[in-house]
Length: 403
Length: 57
Image 1 (spheres, rainbow over the protein chains, first blue to last red):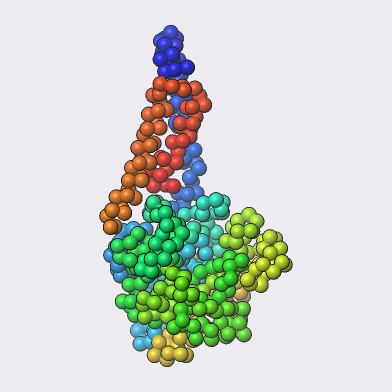
Image 2: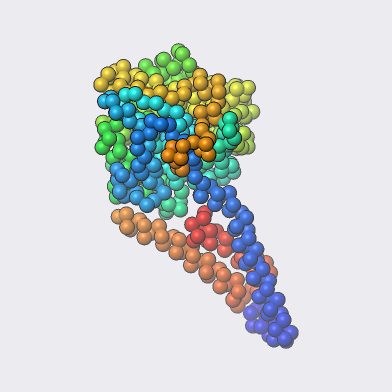
C-alpha cells in the first residue's frame, strides 16, 4: 500500500488509521531504544569502568603520560605513570603493562608490584594500563566477558579484560595497510591501533602512534635503563613462556632465563628479530638507550581453539581442547589440564621474571643496579594474587588511586 | 596532520548521526513500502548508527 493509499484510507476511517500507524512506529522506535539501552549494558559498563589500586608507601609521584608528550593530553590514551624512587642513585626500570589489554596477567602483575613494592636503590616506573582505550573494548566475535574477578581476603576485586587494539571510538578509520614509521614496513590494517606495532611512535601520527611516542619520550627523558613490556601469549605461539630481548639486552635475558628455569619455572629467551618492526623489544632498543625486554606467559584464554571463553577459563586456564592440542604436541609450552595456567601462575611468572632480569642488569652493569622487592613466584603460588591486593575502603585515602 | 585525522574521525560520527536521522525520517515518512515488516527494519537498522553517533559502540 502506497503512502497516498494509506492517507486515503486514513481519511476514510476518520484519521484513526493514521493514528494507529503513528503509534505503531513510535512503539517500534521506543523498542529500538530499549534494545539499545539493554543490549549495551555491558558495553557501557566496560567503557565507564575504573580500576582501583592501593599503592605502596614507596610511591613518589604519579603523573599523566602526557607529561612527556603533550599530543595525547585529554585523550583516553593519557595513561597514568607511577614512580617509585628510592632517592638513592642506581638504575631505573619501566614496567610497561597492558600494552595489549586482553592479556590481563600483565596489568594485574603491575598492580601487585604497585601495591607491594619497596625500593632501596634506583627508580621503578610503572604504567599498569599502557593502552587504556583497548581495555575498554571487547574483542569482536570472541564473545568473552568484559570483566574477571580476583578473590581477596576482603572480597572480590574486578578487572577489565579488554581487547588487543585501541578502541575505534578513539581512532578510526583504519588504513587499508598500516605503514610503520619510520621503517615503512607494511603491516596489517588493524596494527595501526596495535600499540605493540606502533613503536617508537611519531609525534604527528595516529593516536596509538602518539601514545607510543609518549612512552618513548618517557624512556628517553627519564633515562630508563631497562624497559620491561609485559604480555601474555597463546600457547600455540612459539614465544610463549619467553623473554624476547633486544640484542643489547640478550646476555641479561639469557642469564635470567637460565636462573628461572633452574630454580622456579621453565623460561626461554629469544633475540628480537631485526625485521619485525613496531614492537617494543625492537624499537625501544633501537630508538632509546634502554635495554628492551618483553615477557610472555601462557594464556589459554586467547588461543583460538579453546572452548567457551569464560571468566573461569581466564582464571584457571583449564580447557579440554588445549589438552588435546598438548597431547598432539601442538603447543610451545608444557600444559596439563589438572593445573592449567592459572592467573596466579601467570602473574607469579611475570613478577619473578621482571625481578630476575632487573637483578641481572645489576650484575652486568653495577652502576645500573636496582634494589626493589615485591612478591615472588613462590609467594603468589602459595597465597594467591588476591592476598597481595589491598582493600581500598580501609586504606589510607592518599594511597588509593582510581586508574 | 593530527587536525586532519581528527576531522576525518569526527566526520564518521557526523555521518552516523546523519544516517540515523535519515532512517528515523524514513520510518515515519515514506511513500513506498508502508508495511509493518519495513517499519521493523527501519527501527532495527537505526541501532548501530545511534550507538556510534552517541560514542557508545
